[in-house]
Length: 214
Image (cartoon, rainbow, N blue to C red; front, side, top):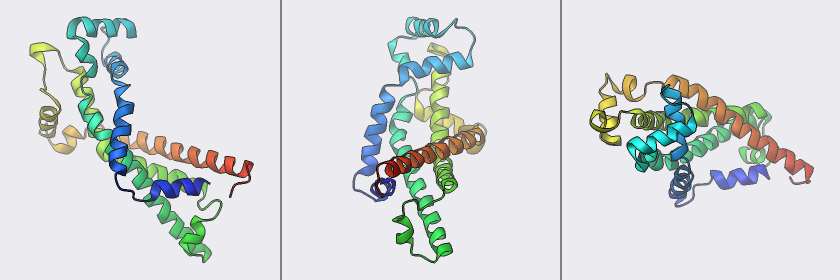
């Protein structure tokens, strides 16, 4: 059953990236108001708590301030989802081919078996998905946080996402500016998606065995 679900996910389907874009955008639309409060609390000590932070943001910067920095994630989250599942399925199929060669079977026979991969291979495939996703998610998060924490009014540093991208890319370079902090993001994403996909496979296969589904 788990493999059947993965086959559907893994097959290229027309409009799948567009679906990811809209589903990701729908999720992100629910987050912004809480996200900027979290970021402000993590980067400054001028607020007494979450409620005080939200109140001061609204009072000093207006309601639109809660949506600062959301355009870039809104446009990029769909692409991130596509990269995650695309990279996972690429790694999974590579492991299936490796297992098939080791067992003297065809890749299709391995793919159709109850457990085509060892659990560590599912974790490794998920980690690969997280690392691949970092190439896009790291600069997206960096831009969002920069826009959410910049001074309000005349002292603002960036005039939107594109201006922020341009200035960060030149300060002092693309890798040391826009991609600053990516090494930590690599570690976070690799572990997070490794455990995410591992947990998904474990629960799907456990449920399939419990219900006698092969």
